[in-house]
Image (cartoon, rainbow, N blue to C red):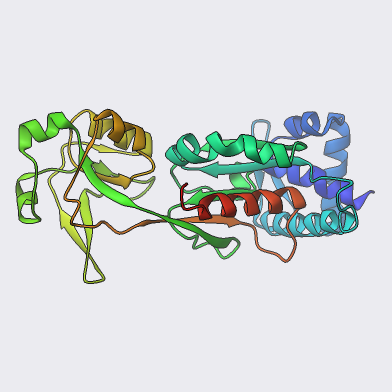
Length: 299
C-alpha cells in the first residue's frame, strides 16, 4: 500500500466526512478509497472512523493521526520544493475561515495582488464569526479576534484594529447623544453572543491602562458581525466595532461615532493553524501575505 496516498485519502475523508465525497475530490473509485482506509486501519491496529449508513465520524485516535499526517505531508511537500526556487511556484488549495467583515472589507478586495504573485494557488474563503475546529471544518487556518486555547493550534498575532463607539442617527434622535460616561446610564447597547456563550451587552473603555466595562440595558441580542452592524443601523442601540468594518457606514452617515475621547480597547486579530516545524508552501506564502497585508499602516 502507498503510505503517502493512504494518508492523503484518510485526510480527505476526515475533512469531508464522506468516503464518496473524498473519492470524488481525489478522482478515485469509491472502492479504492474504502479499501485503502480499511488496510490503513488494519496496519495501524486502530479504528480511525465510526461508520454508519448516514455518517462518517472520526475517532479520537483518528484525530491524533490526522494531525500527524498533516505535519508529515507538509514536511514532505516542503522537502520537495527546497530546490525548486523560481521554476515551480506553490500550488494547491488553501482553505481559510475569517470574520464576515474582515473578508468583505479588507482581505477579499486585496486578493488580486496575492494572485498576481501566486497564480497557481486556489483560495477557499469561508466567512464565520464563531469558533472553528480546523479538523471538523476542513480548513487550513482561521483568523479570529482571540487567541486559540487549543493546544493543537499555533496562534500568531496579526494586528490590533481600532474600535469606536457608534449608533445610528435615528437612535440618537430618540435617546440623545451621550457626551460623557455618565450619560450612558440612560442608553442601551445591542447584545452580542457567540455560540454556546452568554450574551454580552456592555461597552468597554480603556482608563489609565485598565479596561472598564459599563453594562447597559439591551432589547436586542444578535450573533454575527453583519447582524451586529445591521442592528445598529436599525437604531437598536450603541455598538463598539472596528472602524475598518464600518468605514462605508460612517462615510454614508448611517452610523455616527460618539464618545471619541473615551477609547475602547483595540480588537486583536490572530491567525491560527496546525503547529509543526513545516507548513505546506501554499499555506506558508498565504500566511506571509496576510501578515504583510495587516502590517501596512494605510490598510
